[in-house]
Amino acid sequence: MKTGKIVKVSGPLVVAKDMDEANIYDVVKVGEKGLIGEIIEMRGDRASIQVYEETSGLGPGDPVVTTGEPLSVELGPGLMESMFDGIQRPLDAIRAIAGNFLTKGVNVSPLDRKRKWDFVPTAKVGDVVSYGVAIGTVKETTVITQTIMVPKGIEGTITSITAGEYTVEEVIAEVKTEDGIKQITLMQKWPVRRGRPYAEKLNPVEPLVTGQRVIDTFFPVTKGGTACVPGPFGSGKTVVQHQFAKWADAEIVVYIGCGERGNEMTDVLNEFPELKDPKTGESLMKRTVLIANTSNMPVAAREASVYTGITIAEYFRDMGFAVALMADSTSRWAEALREMSGRLEEMPGDEGYPAYLGSRVADFYERSGKVVCVGDDKRIGAITVIGAVSPPGGDLSEPVTQATLRIVKVFWGLDAQLAYRRHFPSINWLDSYSLYMDQLAPWMDENVAQDWTKIRVQAMTILQEEAKLDEIVRLVGVDALSEKDRLKLEVAKSIREDYLQQNAFHEVDTFTSLSKQYKMLKLVLAFHVEGEKALIAGVYLKEILNMKVRDKIARAKYIPETEMSKIDDIYTALSTDIEKLITEGGVVND
Ligand code: ADP
Ligand code: MG
Image 1: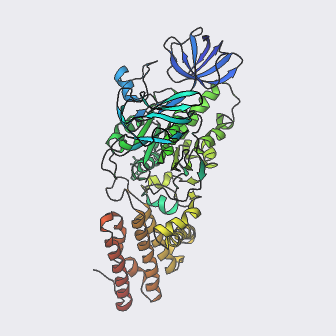
Image 2 (image 1 turned 120 degrees about the vertical axis):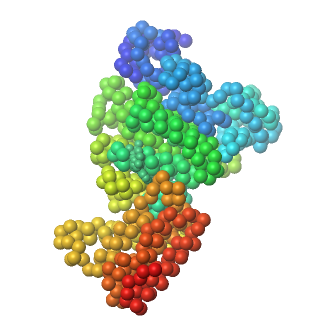
Image 3 (image 1 turned 180 degrees about the horizontal axis):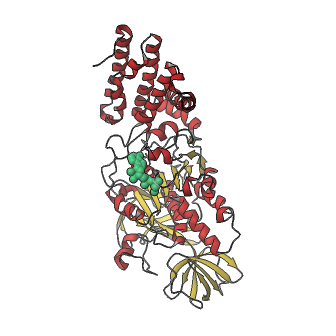
C-alpha cells in the first residue's frame, strides 16, 4: 500500500497527497504516531482528513496510510456499562494506559479482548441463517441479555455452534456459505455513517413514558420517535436528559455527551455510575452506554460521536430492545461540523454552518424509529432520539434549532424566564408541541383512562385562556374580571404549580406514573368544577380560594405511588367541603 504525505495541517484538518489508493470515508493513520483520522473529502490524489486526535507536532511530509476501512464500531458483549470517546475508545482503558489525558496514537480495542462471555446457542447445526438471524444469547449484565445475531455478509447453513465461554474474538459458530465456511464471533463491526438495515418501519403508537408530567401529559414522545429540547444555558436541558435516562421506560440508554462547559462531561462521567436504576435498584450503567466528549478532546471526535452512538443504539434495537438515545448537546456537534467545513473552505451557509447542515441533522434523527428487525422472528425494536440544542442567547431562529425543528416531531421549548422563576422543568406549555399527540390518544385513553384526552385538552385550554386573561389583567386590572374568570386564573395557577412543576431532585416528585398523573390532573380540574358550582350557588370566591383542601391538592405530587388512594381521599374531601360551603355558607376550616 502506497504511503501518502501530509501537505498541510490546519487544526484537526490534515491534507495529504499521493492518496489515490484511498477512498472517501476511509480511516487513515496519520503521522509517525499513527493518529486516527477519516477522509472526508477526496480531490484527485489529495485527501482531506479529519483527525480525531490533537494534531500538534504533525507537519508536511509526514506519512499517511489508509486502513481501507470506513470508520466503524465494534458491536458485541461489553458495550453495556462502557464509557467511550467519540470514536469508541474506552475511556477507562485509555486512562489506565495514558493517565488522565488522551495520549496520541494510543490504540485500545473498544471491546475487552480478554473477558469471557457465556454463550448460549438458540440455533443448531443445520439451521439456515442469514444477516440478522438470532443464533444465541449472552447475559451481558445483570439486567441485559444480548441476542447474538448473524453479521452482514454471512448466509448459509450452520455447521457448528457450541455453548461455552468465549472472548469476543473466539469462534462461536461456523456457517457453510456459497463462498466457503465462514466464522461467527460474538463481536461484529459496523460502519458508523451507515444506518443498520431493518425489515420494516412501523408507525409508533406507544408513548415512551417518562414520568415527567409536562411531557407525558402535554407533549409526549413515542417509542421510536424524535424530540428536541432547545434552551439557553441553565434552563434545564441536561436535567431533562438525565431524567430521561433514569426514568423513561426504555430498556437501553445511549447517552452522548458533547460537553458544553469544561467540567460538565467530567460530571457526567462521575455521576452516571452513581445513578441508581429505579427499576432494578442497580447502577443505571448496567443498561447504559456512555459516549463522552470532554471539551479538551478534538472537535472531530465530537462530529463522529453522534454516529458512534446511534450505531450502538441500532445494534440493540436490532435485538428487539426499546432504546432511548440522548444527545447533549447537538449544537456542539453542529459546531464541529461548522469548524471542519470552514477549514475545508467550503461555501458557508447561514451563520457559517455548511449548506448540508440540514441534511446531516435529518440523517441523524431519521435513524430513530420503531422497526421490525431483520431476521426470521419479527423482533420489534425502537430507538427514540432526544436531542438537546443550545441556541446562542436562546434565539430559536438560529440554524441548528431550525434544522432540528424541521425534522423532529416533538419540541420542548425551555424558557429562560420560567427557569429564572424556578419553574422546573422550564418547558413552555404554550410554545411546545408534540405531533404524536393524536396518534397517541387512543393508546392513552385505552391504557390510562377513558377520559385522558378529554381532561388533557381541558387543562391545556385553561392554560391558554390564562394567557388571554393575563393580557386583560395587564391592561385593565384584575377587578375587571368576573369571579368565574378569576377562579379560572387560580385553576391555571394550580395546573402550573401543583401539576407542571416537578422537582427532579425530590424522591417522590421526580417520577409520576401515568395513572398518578391522571389522578393528579383530575383533582386539579375537580377544584375548577366544584368551585364553579359553589360560585353559582352564591358562595364568595374568597371562601372558595381559602379552602384548606387546596393545600392538600398542592401536595398531592408528594404522595408516593404506593399510597395513591390518598389522592382519592383529597377528591372526596374537596366535594364534601364544597357541599359544606354551599349549605352552610361559611368558610370551611378543617
Ligand atoms: P442546561 O443544561 O440547560 O444548561 P441544566 O440542566 O444544567 O441546564 O439545569 C440548570 C439547573 O437548573 C440545575 O442545576 C438545577 O438546579 C435546575 N433544574 C433544572 N431542571 C430542574 C428540575 N426538573 N427540577 C429541579 N431543578 C432543576
Ligand atoms: Mg447542559
